[in-house]
Image 1 (cartoon, rainbow, N blue to C red):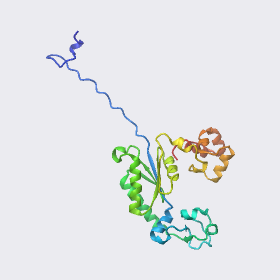
Image 2 (tube, helix red, strand yellow; image 1 turned 60 degrees about the vertical axis):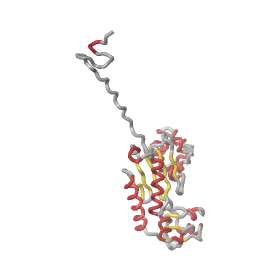
Image 3 (spheres, rainbow, N blue to C red; image 1 turned 180 degrees about the vertical axis):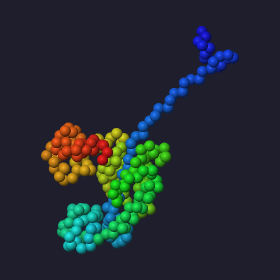
Image 4 (cartoon, rainbow, N blue to C red; image 1 turned 180 degrees about the horizontal axis):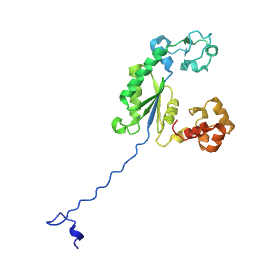
Length: 263
């Protein structure tokens, strides 16, 4: 039987109307959110050791050359941290815990120069870099795979390049939110890299202790423990109204963070 209206399945004939098939629209895909976080390891200490290699491998505390004076620890080497020394601790307390440590005042101008060097390197490779502090950087890689390739080898390549060009090591995290990328970087220090599977942010955070969640300090942790909470996963499941009553708007924000949301 002939096709109606002069349309036929073969090639066009004289006087016949040739109709082209309707083009199928290309589906629009939404880029998957992808973020990396770079955290320079024991940054002030590492810079001091670049300036004076004799300090390598020894307990080193940056904050003041005279530990008997008033002042606080700005950064402690991993060797000093083994004795309980940490940033923010009084210098006198640090001396009591680790009397064999070397104490230096540090040079903020040198730290700024090294931080700028790392930032320039990252900005030359990635379209969007957000400095979070003098030693931490967020990279937004969403939609960049066509330009930059797979984000995992990209992050590893950047870590290696930072070490070769600056002498500094850094830890990195890769995840679907800046918050999870930051936590991932902190879980594999020093000089490590941890990538969270896409969609696995909440599962990654769930077993972690409350203090591992950015924004949870000693007082907030104490208040959350009064609610019977001890892990990030438990915080993620608690009713928002309970958090609002206990901590106000900040409580609701922490609940969102616990579910893998943005900072």
